[in-house]
Image 1 (cartoon, rainbow, N blue to C red):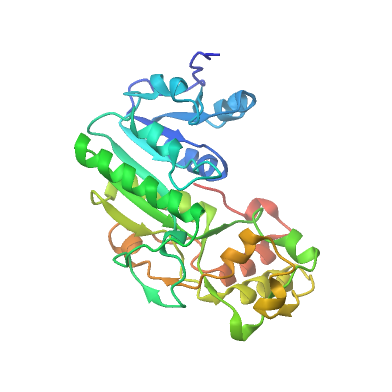
Image 2 (cartoon, rainbow, N blue to C red):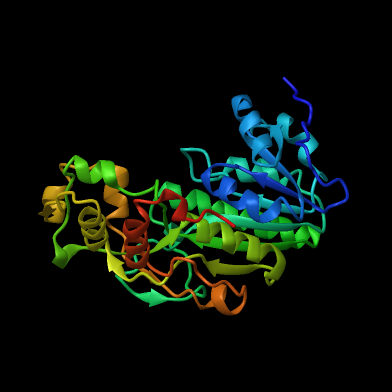
Length: 311
């Protein structure tokens, strides 16, 4: 079924256009940063979300990256595209990004939100964006395929592309509280892995900065300054919310208690430099590290309005 474009009140008809593909939590945080300067089109596969997107200031478009025929009217709709949609859940290629790249216009600017998982396990090494990718699972291979697909499209179409490699995203409503409440274990300190983080609001701000300041074909680590092991992160959140710290187990024992996906996250250790987002994109992180966010969150908990959203 085709749905007509629905324009929110105040939509700026003379403004440049941006298309957000996959407008979930991060996309909703991005909208306030763009809606005063752009006519924002937001793609969703769920018709029930149209009203929510209109209220947020976007023009909703119902389309499905798994159905190429539904994407035809996205071509030439906007000269700026933010690609936030994840790949499908199986396979070694990202069919969704391949479908999208087939209809993207020439001379466009695309910001693609990828994952730091493309590097695989790095043994806790600290590195910048020049490190080669070595994906260890299909989930990461799909992301590598998406990056390569978009690079090829950008070269063919004389377009500008930025790839943001993103780690674990957190926010006031994206903390591992349920995991902690269930008492799920973490690794022993001697076997634990280094993890990277970014607040969802800061990620939205990095995306907005990349739209205007990207160097074509450039990769950026969209990570904050946090330097923690995974168990240390869980301990910090547990302490902040007065929950029990997770029990620590050896890797061999842990394999019996966590899902294969969680085990894969707990098997990759890396620390990522973020100089490019600061020096090239000019981003000043609102939440430079998880520790500072948790201190701020605790101090503001009695006054929820003190917690800023994307603005």
